[in-house]
Image (tube, rainbow over all chains, first blue to last red; front, side, top):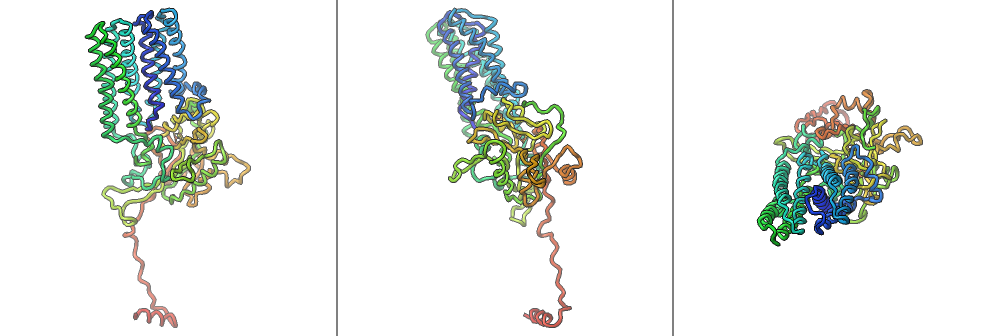
Length: 306
Length: 253
Ligand code: SF4
Ligand code: SF4
């Protein structure tokens, strides 16, 4: 699948934003601290920015409001509805924190729940497509949720450390989410590599009974919308390298830096280590998201021998 | 509404495509584009139409596949490889995933005849339905920014201002070899149902669970050139007169 930058940025930024918002909703951070107030604003900006960027790939964005109507059948519609509904508790709690230095626990928890459901809806947009075999698995929403949780915990720990609070809970949470996130991703990619293709050129044409099917002439000699949108190919050796980079940047390095921060206690090293951890994690997730699209093969490519 | 009709539609309009007959002339591709660029909804645009990178929106495309039996030889007409021309347009699936993913309600399946359509005034051009279709039957029109797909020529088949013979999809009307047939699959006695029953019509990618309405008829078995009977020796012994003389003279040289 074509890795459109607007969608990659959207899923990564809103994933981190919702992760942070979910952590803030738990009320583990001091609402009086400036860092916490800024974090609330940052979470809303990440979510809002992500949503805006996702409208960039619409060809008729002026009608985007219509996308809220079909929540009965469409995960994309559900995502839109949930994103807007979740803004309510998130904004109320952010306002209470920023202006009154208070955390509203019930509203906060509602925001946490909304954030988790929204991320789940985003993942299900992809996981519900049978035509893209690699995406059509329970592991897709699991990965999305775990990555959001890991990023959110890292960001939360950074916020706590910047407010000169040493949040062992959040750092442990970051570790607890980072490990299964990358383990699930590892398994996800193993499936992508090793699964027997659901559809083949033989099943796509129904000519398997006659023999092996190979494209002889494509419909037109240039690329078309289908091959551009769904025929993206990435060289296997590059994909392997990028995946290793993603794991190291997004998993190994942040985990190590969290351990450093844990050891550093209240020293200035703690926020620096956590800041770097978050930066590396974000880069790792961006790479992972690029591969999520670039490596996934669409069933229609059976008609194009790609 | 992007929920699918709750019950099976009373009519199931669709196409039968005969892979034994199609010669890959692309006439249906051209007639489809011609009819649909002026009919229902936005025109089917082309990008860079006179340049080297020309591409455009098509609702029907013809692929050509080479099919080689195991251990088969690929030596033009003498080998065992076969060339199969393969027209493909929307199959108007009964469990159409393209419909249920649509967030706006632009995509829908008609409850009375099962035709899958896009209401272009509601389409935001998100492209998700094209991702959901395993068959590549939906294409975004890059000029209008809305999703285009085969309408089964809904503006022809019910159009009483046309002669009756023309009230079929444009591709069906155009095909010079009669490789495309239009009819109602819900009626077991319709032309298309009978053809499917007699020739073993089948679904594309049944494993995708979409239950396509359109069916394909397989190519008939081919007789290899080598096994064709040789021409019988001609007997010219009854030739008389001038022709008899010519026959004899030609035999001599
Ligand atoms: S062929 Fe594709 S576009 Fe047509 S109904 Fe089936 S899934 Fe939808
Ligand atoms: S491109 Fe249009 S028809 Fe397709 S899913 Fe999006 S809004 Fe619906």
